[in-house]
Every structure is written in structure tokens, then in C-alpha cells.
Image (cartoon, rainbow, N blue to C red; front, side, top):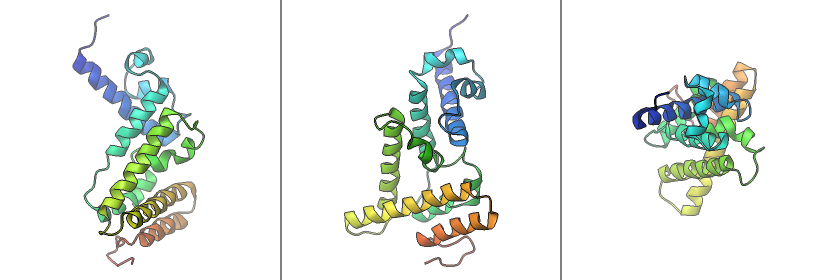
Length: 189
């Protein structure tokens, strides 16, 4: 069997990471199996261990990749993207923090996946804090943590309920709580 070039191996690895990122956000950590991820990437299961040490190593890398995909300029743009109907309806394309928070609680404290998740939460909080108006660092951090908690919680709850009106109300309430104008152009302050 011919060897794949380094470029092709790199492309294959990226396909696996992207497939894993989508699948674990859609199905959860335990329901996204290696064979299914490899199939979604268009590769055979046998090649997995040539690329990754373990499923956890893949999930950690996929989590990091997914977290980096939504790069928006400024807090208002970030909140608008985050608290959006498309984000609620497409967990496989959205924030891995909201998609995986419940699963992560079942991971061992020292697991590689939990470490990457924790680092991702810190980065998101730092990014939000950096976008807040100047002020005391501790106050900005607390506001950032509250903002992030409100946004992530709203997405988790909106995805969990089966009532469209309540779903929309949860998202709009979060948007209002973090003081970002609503899509209708009104001021949610």
C-alpha cells in the first residue's frame, strides 16, 4: 500500500479534526465514536492511530479547533452571533463550550478533554473581558464571567426546551441581560 505524502497526511488529519469537532458537538463525547468520525472524514478506521494517540487527544484538538472558528470583532458582534437562532439550531457548527458543557462534567478532573475545556472557558472569558469598557480588572473579569455564563446557559437551555416561544424568550432575555441591542434594532439596555 503506498504511503501518503506529508501534505496529504496533514489534510487527512485536518479532515478528521473537523469531522470530530462537528460530531462531538452534535452527538456528545461518548456517542461520537472513532469509527463514525473516521467515516465522516472519508477515511478508514484503521488510520486513526497513525494520526492520534487516543480519542481523547482527538477530541481535545477538535475542541480547540472549534473554539477558534468563530472569530468576531468586538463584543456586540460576538454576542449577536452567539445569541442567534442559527447557533441554537446548529450545535454541530456552534460553540463547543455550550455543546459539551454537560458532557465535560462527567469527565475525570485531570482528563485532557477537561483541561482543554477549562482553557477554552478561560480564553472566552478573557476575550469578553478585553472587549469590555476600561475599568478595574477584577470587575471586568467578573462581568465577563457573568456574560459568558448567561450566554452559554441560554444556548444550553434554548436547545433543551421543546417550546419555540420559550426558546426565543430565553435567548432574547440573555441578549437583554448582557446589554446588547436586539436584532430588531431596539436597545436592550
